Length: 414
Image 1 (cartoon, rainbow, N blue to C red):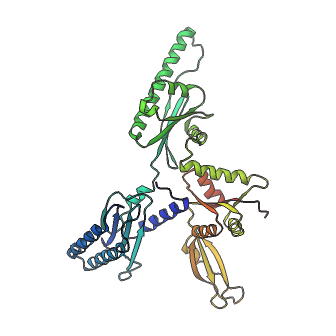
Image 2 (cartoon, rainbow, N blue to C red):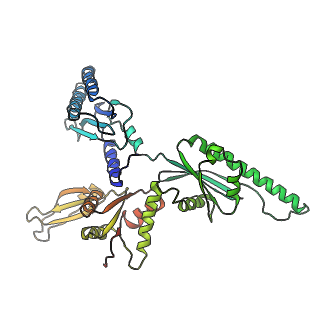
Image 3 (cartoon, helix red, strand yellow):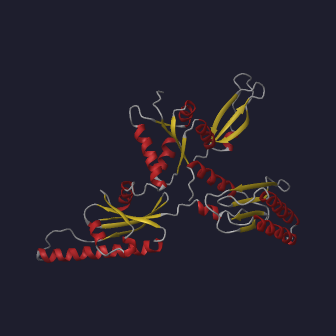
């Protein structure tokens, strides 16, 4: 993906989420994707052709709405001499606000984070978002395996998500004397069983990882003991996969816990992966939090106060933060109070009275809590990082700290 900031990516994801919820009454929402090398004159000609074709739409209302949307698109592209560097995407259509007759024309013009590669014109009852959704996906994949003499687990790490693909057990007995058999003969049997187990691991990993090899950025091997090194040194992995092994790390655990330990110990090899960046940020925050005078702050009110003071160096916000900040005002004297609510129905239950006039306060404005914090952070030149809840650390930020935390520039004594 192009070099976009955490905030820009969050805002782009938020826009896509909003667009995904919009529906037309008929097939009257128009989506147009324009590659950067596409001549806008050709796009204009195509739009005029579609305008003519739309006369064949049977429904009078749908026909009128499609034609209006195409006219808006024609007006919009006239403002550009050529498409921007990554192209242009337009979403235009009549969106109903309630019953029949409440439709309003809405227009969204986006410059995508990656170049548009294919010209698209689509007309449907929802906007065509798949190409943009694909752009913001993390496509790099890492293979991870943790191996010892008794068991092996292999997984993929894509973006922030680890997926266990398989778990194998060996049945190889421990190295001890077996009844009447000679020790040497018994050791040969054990070594052969161990070899067969490593061969089986290789077959399963080849089957799992070879279809991914074009996207596979690397493979990390881990585990307690020497078995992982024996696996790497032997001819168990297909040569293209073996060439992708980035590092071999020692772990205390096997199984799923071992996979997580491998990922944590491979931070240097995965430093460009979002998951490690986010994990390190949250871990840095927690380390500061447990210090006697640590540079950490959490919770909506505390972080907001620190932001206003200019004390926040890095603001950490959960991507799953959905609360809203509402302003209620007295219609007589102008007294205001602010509330944070999870949804509008919760806001509707607020029955606060003015401390001066005793009148019920009325809601006058509403803003996403995330947007409020981002605006305050920008005013104070504070970095903002959005943390996914797909990781253990991200879920901890959301559940234990309310999705709002900060790493401070200096210690604040509360």
